Image 1 (cartoon, helix red, strand yellow):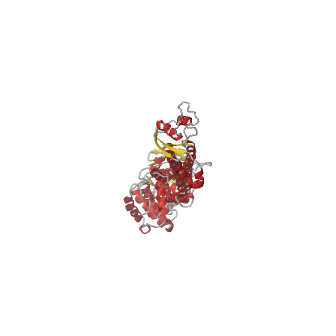
Image 2 (cartoon, chains in turn green, red):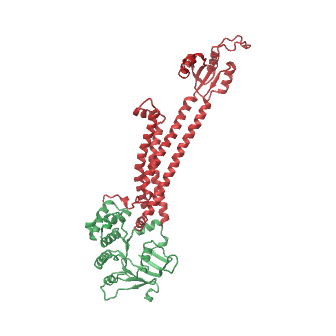
Image 3 (cartoon, chains in turn red, brown):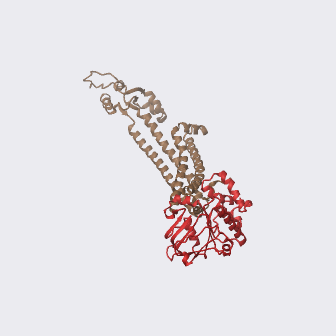
Length: 243
Length: 310
């Protein structure tokens, strides 16, 4: 699904923020992406959703080198990705319903289908009473769930979530993660960036940990709940050795 | 879910985009009036050229006098033929000349009376005028006719209206070109304002545009939102401005025809006052063309700008 080979990322001047990153997200895998804020989690996600091109190395998404994609191919690739942004990025003059409908509209889905699917999904995330509410009238947790509904409405092959639990208490955070688990079981490849260790411990999926610009894979300890169905990280070079 | 799909981008939120309707409306109003002026000038010059090019006027002074009474009739003997008859004879045998209308002295006096007054008219001796309708203006050699006429009837004058017709044509052509130039200029200004509206809309809504891109929207999808906005602003504005401009033209028509009043004058002007059916079609098409043009401009501007935005 996603493969990083010897990827380096640096912004303008200064040292690289990510160095020699190698990993692969297998189809239907679930990974956490951890690290302190500023460690480069968002940059790594941005390279997957084609908003950033690596300074060095190669990023492959859906078996295509992201550097070779045309503008139209980039748009079409992104329709197969669901993104939950750290700051939600809901459109503030559109209702929850319209925000969630957006990816379907962009994909040219028929209005009748949109009218059926959107309320279903909003119901599923527990917002059936707030379908016509504007984002600013919703609580942080409610906004987050709208953002997640929008990310998954078009049944993406890959779900990328950037700190999806950053603005909510642990109780809601866990509920959101169960939601991701359900999508994962339905076949979606999931990558969740977080610095919430409690979550990682609870859900016990493999972790990709970024520290000092280097990415290491941390397998869930066996003492935790078994999550054996999740995909594996394929180490290409020394990541594993250094770990 | 009744919400229109074009509301994702609140283009009119701030920025110059909200003034677009007014700008386009004003431009359409000016363009329609300028085009009407151009078309009017054109039709006036066409009609004058048409009605005058087929007509020449021959003036024969001292029409009753015999041709050359002094005996210069060395060739023809004592010629008692009147100058008028001699002139008519020449005109009749000239190929290409059709109907002749003789405007005799009494008629000429009657025509002049309102201008000069009965007393004065009685004292003058106006020339007899002969209006010639040319069957085919290209066949008639006016220069040769003038020579022949002046040899037989010295003092006779041919007026083919060419000189002043040329001058009138030059003026009307200048008015016509000026009118179309204004239409072009105004179209250019409208284009530029649409481009500015789209660019400012893009920069004000940059975050939303970026979000749409990240959700897989192609440039065409985003551009369509701008097209929709521009059309919603430009179409009603163009229609209203077009109607106002036509009303203005009608009002000018009514003022220019004081003998008829009100609606009748407007209608008469509309039908006969210089505009042909095609002219009205062009005048009414201008607002539509403007609206369509702003639409295309909005799309092009958005596509180009989005490509730069990456």
